[in-house]
Length: 325
Image 1: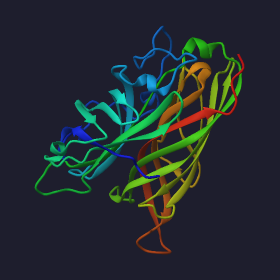
Image 2 (image 1 turned 90 degrees about the vertical axis):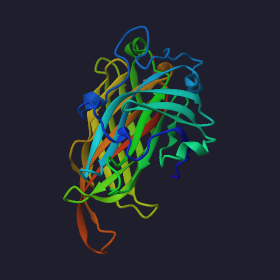
Image 3 (image 1 turned 120 degrees about the vertical axis):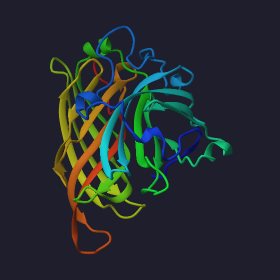
């Protein structure tokens, strides 16, 4: 899938502080968790959904509290890791791609029309909307230095994913009954490392499908499965993986560790999501991939190489059928 990008109006040079992550939290499913446990207002700062809610309601609504999940390569040290942080988002126009987001203490503003003066400092920040439903979606911003420059310090590669939308009232979920299946797509980008932890292939795309079976009853459980393929520069798939998870619902959200079932070995992949819209119309969330796999070496045909994939991703899935109240 081609990225639809928007040039930043206010951005950082490749050696800017958004490559560091002094304000990040532990990389666990609990840390990635978002949504609202209880109360009269949503944790993201917006009103809860009604029958008339639409994704465009986020436009001009003010700062939205978000989680951000991203792969970060620090070229000074050569290390790549998964990073989670608490940030804010302000959406002015979904159609024009105009929004502002904080990242590690910096505020970045993106506009579809761009600003020629904004790139004078060498910044390469760009943005795109990643997945979209009726009342929720995911977006991303990215910047790639693609290696260390001896004339600079602090160079980094990163692609950061976030969720926004109109949350379901947890009180509404508490009285729902029945089993509902959600289906949708996931998309992300990250770094493929070799066995020594060095970047082997940069900006690897992960995309695929996700299915969640949600039991709205006394157990309030979410059982999910995903199938995803890794691609480099639009070439044939490097690898395809199957993963599953099972967890409970807390308020209007859920979070869990992901388990590899085919095509990969577990490192510490995590997933978190929330329900959006009246009657939990859909669910959007974040994935932090951290998996190992043996793949065919694209540089040396018919040979295998041990790799580790670290990546952020977003997903949106919609009900196959409405829940029964």
